[in-house]
Picture 1 (cartoon, rainbow, N blue to C red):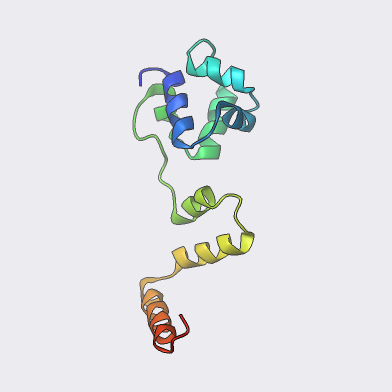
Picture 2: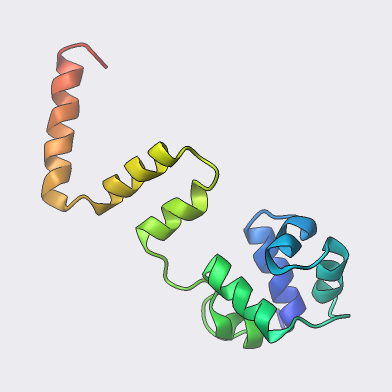
Length: 121
């Protein structure tokens, strides 16, 4: 991927977004995103920064093709990314799980085992 347009297209496909969906986030019509992807139009610096902030994209990867595509994401960031649109309760439960220290996982496993042994699961 030698151009920013190619990297935008790659990113959009990785995110499973249409050109219209991707464009809404940065204030562009789908046809404008198509032009950017075809290298027939350029993004503003503000749009590039918005993409990076919204999708946790590495600025140098997007602008110059250097480094990894995505910034390091915390487990909570991943929950937000992959559970977008899910119930707030489900999201908060998953975030609680990712914050559990190792010793609490053992307690959680023991609790599940007790429930299984009592025939309730």
